[in-house]
Length: 373
Figure 1 (cartoon, rainbow, N blue to C red):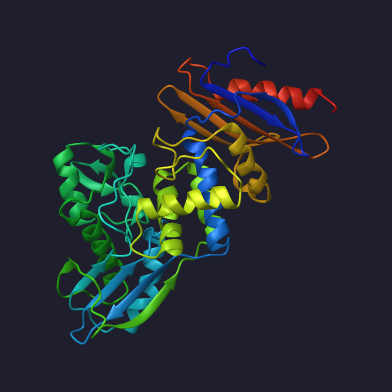
Figure 2: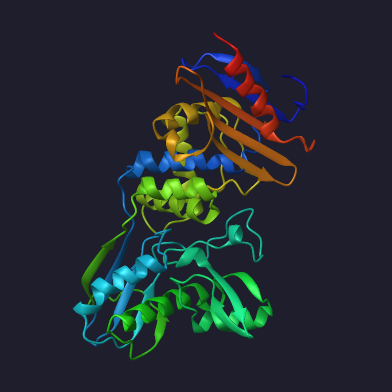
């Protein structure tokens, strides 16, 4: 199995009992790419619990203004907002201004490795974000329309689409000119009106005035953290990964959430709970090349993640998480033998050789299938 393993690559296979069957460069810290999401998920389960639900709070002041305070819910999507408004709308006769409070996260948060692009994996993070800070659209007869039946096309999105001159695709919201909060406000405004409660005034970013505003509703997401992690791993969603990481950092060190707090909390967890020694982390999705971890330490992650392994993608007798950056291919997961025992493997290819991690994994799978240890 040594063929194709370069000096900046690592391959590791461990048996169901944890004994090392094959190891090459397993102590060398390498870039894990998106396999890092397994550690981020495990870190969140440890501090928050698999039944944790993200919250969004609603306040009303004496002037009839409504404040929406976000706490980083990564699945605050159109369907969830419509459900919120169906519950909240009947509680309110009318709304003057709609104020959006995103102060639970430090802003702006700049994720290392994120570029200024139109790709969904480069969407920015924040405490109050809607639809992953993306808009999926198409144009029909020159008119912009939503490409998702559950999502309305809103004024801010229409204006951005016109500037791009694109006919279809996704646009990414940014922190500039309060786009993220404006879009969130327009989404709530749309669904509140649909449920009989119009917003008469304007939409503005504003922190809650604790002297006059009273809490009228606390929404607990319909998605547990376990469900969030399943979505995170299914779609390898960078936005979700860092929303989760930042939220745990705020839980451990207090708000406002920031990358320094989150990274410090994860380092402490990795060292104290998993006995990891090589971890270097600057964000939680794996998009940054500055993230480093050895195959041996990733094996520690896999051992701890085993009770949750069915949340991962499956191909036959393999549960896995892949990672890809330019010149980097990684894969980590579990191979089940005929006796339903789980072997754990890690493949980190950082040598820019063009070799795909899947090829190495196929060798490991064949070994497990054909060997009777």
